[in-house]
Length: 228
Image (tube, rainbow, N blue to C red; front, side, top):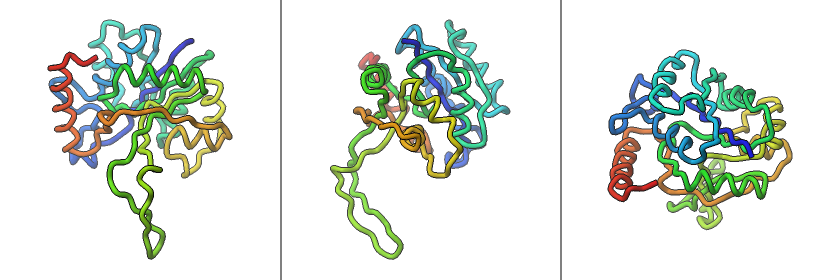
């Protein structure tokens, strides 16, 4: 089945304390975004990438794409005002029955096995949303009081959130709602069930400066182990 990866790279550098958007920050000599693109290209040789960027950063994206031998598999589109609208822009490029991955560009440590697991589960169940068990104690705040959540019942959601095109395309024809925090919430609002699959603790989202240090260390460890 045809495979598309909608890579959403609309973040700013505010929480990083940097004027450079975090997807373009250097990580061991390459942009954060480069690692994400590279992993998806290696996952399947028939996978096409739809890279969604803010209009003002499209040229930066093109410069990164030009470093890949198979750059013809990557197409850039301009994003929208919200994540929902940016994904919606990317999905306009999906013209055939397929499996669609939607991934945060700054989750640059995503692995080939995780991408392939999401694909297989989406083909079987219609969707595959990676998640990992919570490791911290969690409390739910409700106005003036708070309660302890059962940690074993909590899952931390990651990307690539993966769906059959027959599910995600009509789901994104809905009107936007503030309750849409990710693709899974959009699909659920459409009325389709979302299936979780095992994520990876290394699949962190680059959000704060310390995340760059963690990512660099993980890349060094993977290089030493010849991680694929």
